[in-house]
Length: 400
Image (cartoon, rainbow, N blue to C red; front, side):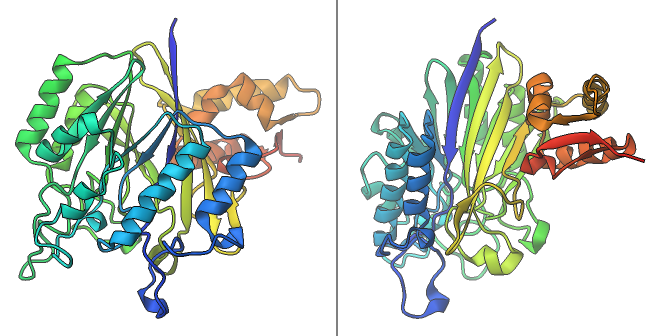
């Protein structure tokens, strides 16, 4: 039975720009003119040290956009260069990206054409040149390789100007996908469907509402649910988006009953969400495993960056360092397996690594399912030494 694997890194919402003297104007920790030492104050330099020390490698680097802040040219060049520098350190085969609302000049600050800057960045931005024409012309393109199919969507395709009279509507606030686009995407997928491939969607804006933490309800993708239903029809394994700066891994149940995993990436370097919602900066490594034509399983490892501390994996504020997707069966089945393993132990205690080896599906749980599993274990008087999303050391029976 053939098993396909794909390992990706996700870098989103850098908001890179030159440092301003007035602190209020700075919206990122990643300045285009920032000195790299000390490394704990530079998200890229610190990450490069970790990649080298831990010998981390991936197949692809994916980026959902917002390389710069408010169309700043120097920030754009530097942001894209930073992502490619990280990709080289990770020995990635390719960088696949899309553009965000800050990457285009919809308010015409520098040009009368919204897309002049991103189209002239060159350097294979945001994808390889052979796919660029369709991306710019239609607002989407497909990248096909032997093991994977990636749909790259430009949710800013209709951001041609800014409407001061109606700022909460298109074209400069929320994303949009036209019904004709969605129809053509469905047609392509029908003609090029290979259920054995790992299938990923990449887009900047969120296709369904993401209004928790009072982050607003108006900037999602118009017609986003229709788009997700098409992805569900062809059993996509994962959709990745940026924009919200609030990391969140959840499922969306499409019309045909398919549970589509959606990752809101959070931000790699922006700072506004730190004061708004106490979320920091995030870098994800995702290993996707696909067994024939079944939906894929995924394991996420997430590093969190705090200024003057650097990237760490051993914290749970904002997003667990370990999460996953793919397991959709009854959690009680996992509980029963853990009970069986503990009952076979002479001391009623086991290392969590042993549980992972014997019950690998515990890795394929979203954060909310991990918390639900902890609650179910507690009713059986089974305790873990820390949150499952922080990777506990032991699991054991509670002593009377």
